[in-house]
Length: 176
Image (cartoon, rainbow, N blue to C red; front, side):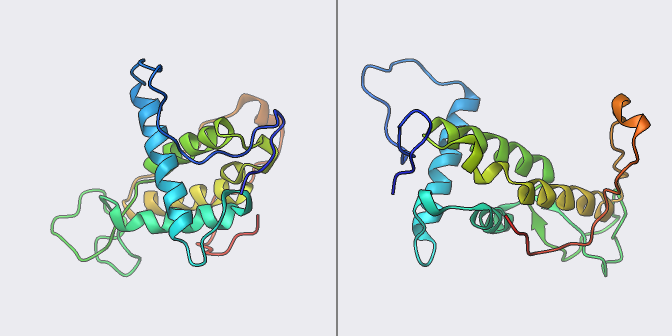
């Protein structure tokens, strides 16, 4: 179940702090640890269970979709009469989802936790381009559904290069 890292450490399962570590972790460290434990538990409950050494970006994408059921952000569907309205005048039956910003922060914490637990940057499933693509799609769709224009920050170095369109259709399959 362990994956060899550059330092020879295996990819570690979450463990309790040693008794001699009395320092209170920061809010970020506590959240990162809770997120890591939740992800590892998700893999254990996966059918069939997935060892960390076999985890890939598709498992991460499944985890992100699983988390949507616990979201608190109303994301209007394209057929909803309030689609594209930032402040709808009445309630609707559209689903609640995880907000893009929450997912982006979660991936950042899990990416760091993976490497802190013995994974290597080259095998980190949270650093996959498929994950970045998925987050971009979620950001664009949520912005459109909520009527909030998303404007990409200008990169001064990119002014001399051609720009790449951000908008993509909502794809559910990604290759890692």
